Image 1 (cartoon, rainbow, N blue to C red):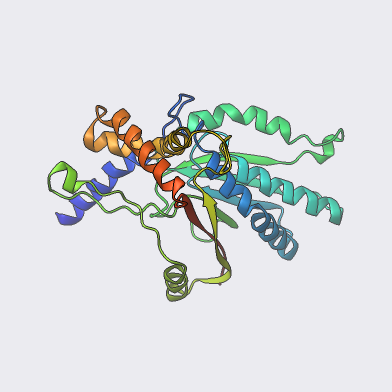
Image 2: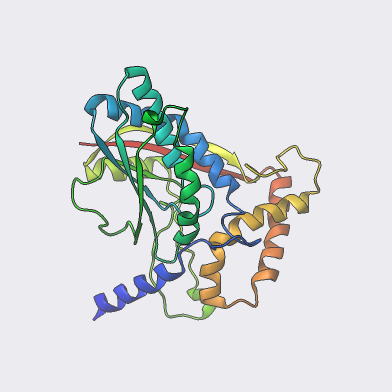
Length: 290
C-alpha cells in the first residue's frame, strides 16, 4: 500500500514539474536566457565529445537524447550544436555525415507543441550551402516521461545530454500544514558528492567534472554593470525563475499569492545582487560508459 501511495505521489508531482508553456510574459520561452548561457558555456565540450565519439566509431546513425529539453528557443539548441560538430568533422574527413536520431525528453506537462511548431524552420536551416548532397539528416521525436525511470531500451542511446535538469529531486508529499508541507524538490550537491556518486555507481569514467559561476543576470539585456536600477534587474531575475516555479507553487498554494510573491522575490534578489551575492555555481560533467 505504501508503494502504491508513493507511486501516486510521484505521478502527481510530475504533473506540476514543468516549465510554463506558451509565449506569454511568464513563459519559459521568454525567460530562459540564463539557461541558454549555460548551454553555450558547455558547447565546446559537447562538440568535442561528439566529434571524438564519431571518429572512434564512424556510425551511420547516432541516437542522441536531450534529457529535460523543456520548450522555447533553447529546446533545439544542443541538437543544432551536435549537428554543427558532425558537419564540420565529416567535411574535414570527406565523409558523408551520419543520420542523427534525436529524442527530446521532458515530463508529460512540457509544452512539446511549441517545439513541434518550430521544427519546419529548424529543418530548413539544415540545408547547408547550395549542394543538396550536404543536407544534414536529422529525425526528431519527443519522449515524455521522467528520466528517473527507464525511457529507452538498454544500450539504445549513443549520446546523452542534460542541462539544468539534474538538480530536480522528487521528494514526494508530506502530510503537514500547507507551509510546512511545501518542499521545493531541488538539491544542489557539491563537486565531491557528485564525484562520489559516479565512482560508487561504477558504470562511467569521468572525462570532465568542473564548475563555473554565472551571474543571475547572465543572458539578460542588462548585465552586471548595467546602469539600470537594481530593482529592475531584480525583477528580471525573478521573472526568469517564475516559469519553472509557478506550476509547483500554484499546485500547492493556488494562484492568488503569485504576483505578490514574485514582487517580494524581486526585492530580495535586488538586495542580494547589490551585495555581490547574485551568482549561481554550475557543474559541467562529461561521462563515458564503461
